[in-house]
Image 1 (tube, rainbow, N blue to C red):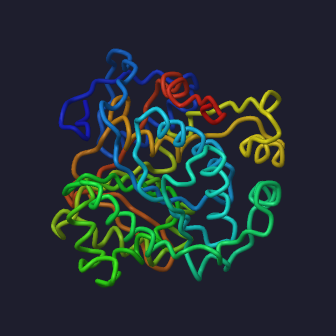
Image 2: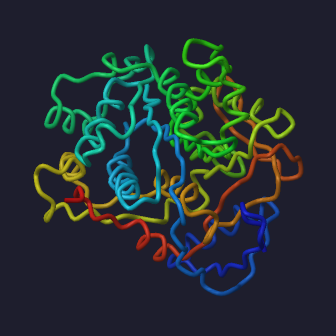
Image 3: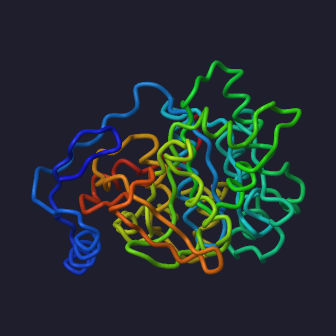
Length: 355
């Protein structure tokens, strides 16, 4: 039995298709003190009754999972499940933000939300081959240097939310990349955009943070280790005692990797950026750890396990993280012990813009 993010108890059967996965995940959860009992299959979750107010922070580089997340996220905007106030790329390479803009414009959301970049650090690493293919095809010559900084975009996006009638603790802040942009934003001083500091804005307007980050029980995962100082600072400072909202974390190794999206590359038009990305990699499917993180923010805890109030820490030099389930800090570990088919159906995408 596990307590969900909304305070109710959830009984789950541990029934994944792979025996290897069953053993691996059961060991991880039991080592953390979770109980694993059998229960009924999780029902298909109800969609949100009103749009979920969202900030999205992703690198959109390296692996090609961004090319699966973006179609679903943009579809959820179209059907009224999500109101996206701002999207930033925390990539330390030059084509993360341009790739996000390609998807935004392809789904005809150019006027819906701004895109920001981690400047000036976004040119410190080379781009991935699939980003090069997508940007060269759809917006050749674009680079992160042409974008507003992600700190500015995050501050502006929150004030747009407030100007649009948004109230306290009404924004989901989803981060599926490094914590570089969040660290910069949280440490930002009052300015012409707002008289509030980044700390004050987060504490007042964020309902919860939802991150894809780290490993369980401990480990070194890209989103934490690529900017280890930012990762360590986030988990040390963003706590309940520090006045922050809850932090829900999807670690790399607790089940989200078992949810896989099949991309219909052969039937998609050549004008589709997901097709372009996957063809460039010779792939037709992708694990959904980032998309599952967005799913939790939009649909809630149905199908997930949620740890007790816990503490995650990270080392500032290495990004090695470690969970302590006996020490409450407002950090919650998310797990997914089975029923991948339900999530794979939920996350299937129409792929094309709505006409």
